[in-house]
View 1 (cartoon, rainbow, N blue to C red):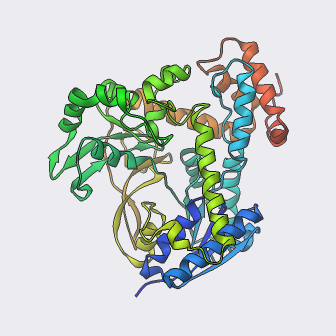
View 2: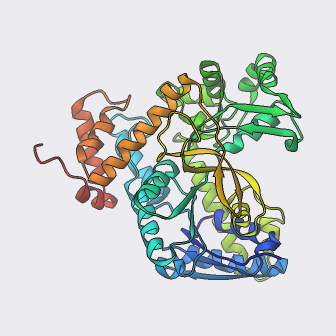
View 3: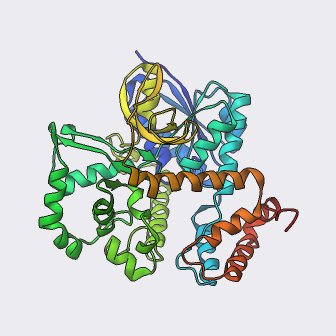
Length: 452
């Protein structure tokens, strides 16, 4: 026996996420009878996702119900879980911003002014939940997970769990060095979102870090010379990852690798050296269009199936569960099907040296009692001083700027970029970003201090 729930998906017009969620629900018998409420402001994408979900469930004979709406409050009504995966202004606005910054001498962005729109949406969703479904869990699956989850847990009483994909890089390491049975793998990679480090790595009960060292010594150079990435985010075993491992004694995991330091990102040739051919990692003028094109291709495939009554949704999406954590966590919370997951929740002592109200990424036991973070203790002091604590400070500045509307904090952020060469350059690029047609709300909200 199981428990039926209502799940509201905010930003449901995703090219892959929503149908992956439906697939996992269809294949989780203990959640039979559940309702999925798709919410998005794009009616065309919303219709595609809704129709495909119904067809997929029907083909599998799964007991699920679906609804779709452009009204967020309606979707939240009676929700037990809310999954927020929305990206407010999208990839094309990000591209336009990079083009503006390039005119001022910044390579591929090179400067940012925070995530005001996404943070505001997250907070609005959480405020709505306090009024409409205060007992529901919010599973934050869209970026910025770190800043957004911290903001929502501080400003509301909603139960928030942030989720990300980055920790799956552990399995990429294991496969690359020749480990085949992932059930024999035991690991921990705590930190903060997009800044996590492999503190424990065991295979069949034995420390597997020496196997990484052996791979680097005997196969690393050949791999970096010959490996051609087929995915834009294929960076886990790159030179940059190993260089960070040599610097800190722990392997960086997932998006930690692509961040590293400014010296990995000065130009395309440098990026290709550190992150490999042909893209130079996911954050280049070559990679990002490929990534976006892949999302658009996937949506086109989905639309094609919707428009062809003879096409099979199961043939498109398969019959195996995804590796996403949303559905297993929901199942654990309501049906007591216990599991261990990588989550983003308030620290409360899980990692030594980080304030309790800062959201950290740590392993947690999930069951009917809730999400219970595992106390992982301290990270090495060098990792804390050079990576984790600076990341926490950056997050705190971003949230303070968001909450106060202080434009001078945006300027300070631009001035701190390693690509900024002068005060005038920083002022000019900030003003041009704020004057972009889609940024009227930012220009209105962020004001110079009264004594400016």
